[in-house]
Length: 54
Image (cartoon, one colour):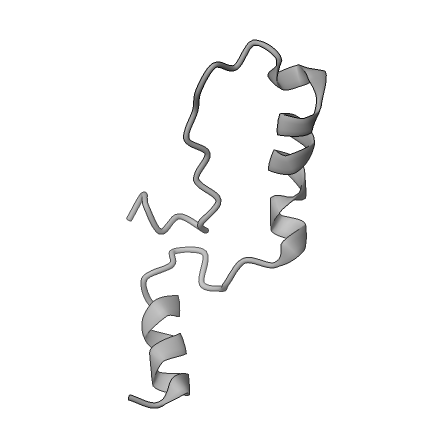
């Protein structure tokens, strides 16, 4: 399979319609690195453009 076909296949399964960019992860990183997450003892944070919700 050619690379463009693989990319389109992946994108078709992501509801937001695009791959993640590094800036898409800044908010979660800031949360986990700050005292705002001090009371968190475990969580799954899906940063996947809705892939797991679909």
